[in-house]
Length: 608
Ligand SMILES: *[C@@H]1O[C@H](CO)[C@@H](O)[C@H](O)[C@H]1NC(C)=O
Ligand SMILES: *[C@@H]1O[C@H](CO)[C@@H](O)[C@H](O)[C@H]1NC(C)=O
Ligand SMILES: *[C@@H]1O[C@H](CO)[C@@H](O)[C@H](O)[C@H]1NC(C)=O
Ligand SMILES: *[C@@H]1O[C@H](CO)[C@@H](O)[C@H](O)[C@H]1NC(C)=O
Image 1 (cartoon, rainbow, N blue to C red):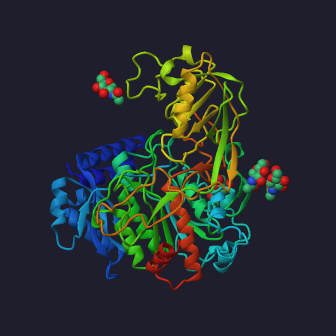
Image 2 (cartoon, helix red, strand yellow):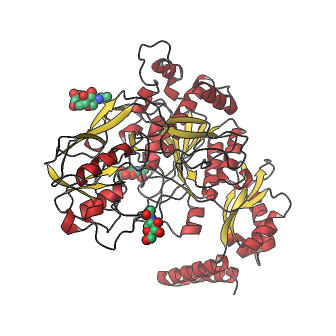
Image 3 (spheres, helix red, strand yellow):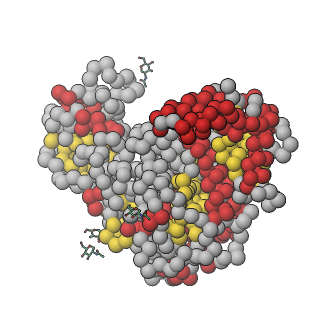
């Protein structure tokens, strides 16, 4: 029985039978279709650029013809087609077997056939614009007067930035459009409706919003309603954070949970227009969002046609592919040809050599560095010794509690000599931890959860990274992180005292700290794995403990156990530094509309 027959008979049934029969029939088709495309993977077939001689129908027919020649029937070719790129980029994505993919790659006009790399949003995630001198003049004439520069650029009001990410939380004050001028006439985009998102959620700030999930669903199955909004609305928080860093309005008195990083929150180009392209989807609660190339290419095809000037793409991969097999490299090449600037994150897999991703020469690849701000919290040990920790977890000064080293309070057999002292989930003994402060050799949010599970009253962590950089997140119990050099002090105090104790003082925001900037410990490094003669990353920008807007649909830690809701959150990663550069590129574009994207990239790299 072929698909055509089933479809026809279903139409027939629909007309005459009860609704549930139609549903059964639909299920039957779905199963049948699934069987047709089973055991096949999603491939992207890249054909270059459209010449403008074909209409949409002809283009899709042309794309299907490639599939038809390797598939059994026309219907099968139709079913297995996922995306057909029709505006600028010529190509399609489809279910193919490796053999079919290989056959297609030999056909006339085919440039490349490839599978998507694993691309994800990875958060490590007020002050950054002051630090870069873009928000306030500081009277030092040798430095750039930031406010003047912003004025010259009209705060970016005529520039449109496309944000490829996990969507947007439109209710954030950062995206209010009070006093903004009408949407630029050049804009040809749209505000796509979906779950909890309709045209009223776009405004003069968020001028467009779309979502792409065909490739995602082909590989991961239908988007789960509990996990995601099937719309441009941001469930994860990452997209809201990056978009507000680029173009958030000035919001006074913003801060993270507990009042850290307080001040005026602002995007780098506060009047710039944002166009949201949601290409990243969260498969499971604890999983990082996935951003398949097939959907990203569809977004590039639309964004170029819609009329964006800058594309900001805080999406990283762990490996690099040759440019013709890399959706971001292909999409950004077509963007560049129209003088659209594409800015990408360099990745958070450092300091491993050659960990940098997004290495195509025509896009801007951004590393992450610190700003001049820390969140200091003092620990007083029982012998009066003071150790400085760092925290953005809100808590009051603790009592003087007994202090234990994790190594001494573990459940026997739950750790090895490699995992001991590290507070891994399920390793701590409730009996030995209850009512105490636990010192873990290294730790972050999941280790804080483990100390809480075991009944600890507070935690002190050794920084997983060397150097001064501490990646901050608000823990679910009082806790602070000490630099690696201070770990031995605490362990030695515990070993050499009968009744060790610790008192934790609340954290506070300190600005003007130095030296700054220094490179963030996680920022990905060159050399460029595809073409070592081309240096990557291109530039660095603030990406360590950056405050920006957040979704109200996910807690600040993105942990299931966390039920807190925040409007602003602290995030770290090259995902946070990339939008800083996107904002500056937008301002330069506003001042020099005639500059090519290569000129803007060059001026950024040569002047910092
Ligand atoms: C859009 O959604 C809001 C609620 O989020 C609702 O109040 C409004 O009526 C909707 N507008 C349209 C045009 O459907
Ligand atoms: C910001 O907070 C301070 C102190 O709480 C308050 O005096 C001030 O009015 C607030 N400013 C705005 C614009 O809300
Ligand atoms: C942050 O809040 C503290 C305490 O209220 C205040 O002293 C400080 O000036 C604020 N910082 C900024 C940048 O607004
Ligand atoms: C851990 O123990 C194993 C054997 O029990 C040993 O081979 C290994 O060297 C030890 N590792 C460390 C870091 O001590």
